[in-house]
Length: 235
Image (cartoon, rainbow, N blue to C red):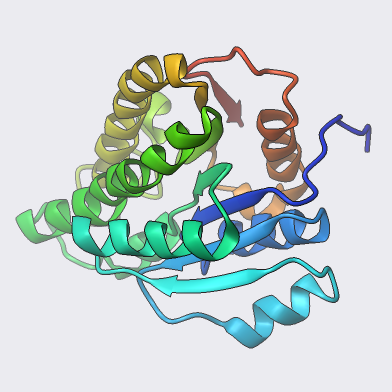
């Protein structure tokens, strides 16, 4: 693989959704490149598995569990991570949307399902950003990556666009919401030296981890330092 420039040694990164397939893979990559990690999730961690995957990288790793939709919980976790690591340089939101798909088994659109998707995915991305941005602003620099899906553009999902309970309409709406939110936030914080960009994945992303890692490397490398609210669509 062609190398991207970038010195990650000693940087500090918060990964929200660290217990997801993507979150674990990205965390492993960052740890092996000397990045200290604040791993944040809604659920308990596979700590032994993550530690084993990271090997003897020497990176400092902190685990925090937050309450979904709780601003105070996210703010507390960010403050503790920043204090323990000495600041926050990166934030990667890698929510486990695949698990939300698996939980949907209704035969029709339901309000509870809407609420779960919007709160656990869209609202929690916002709360993670809101909790971390002040710590980056204090340093005058930071890089944020939102992991999203291509369904916000294509209108397709696990249900091939059907208005049923198998995930498509919920995921499309949430994906589009994240794109709009990211664009707005990016314009607000870029004067503070903070870049906000994204990666959109298609349903077969589990077989494409190399390209996902490449995209993470690109956004963190500094080669796109002036990019604002740009999204790499990995079809």
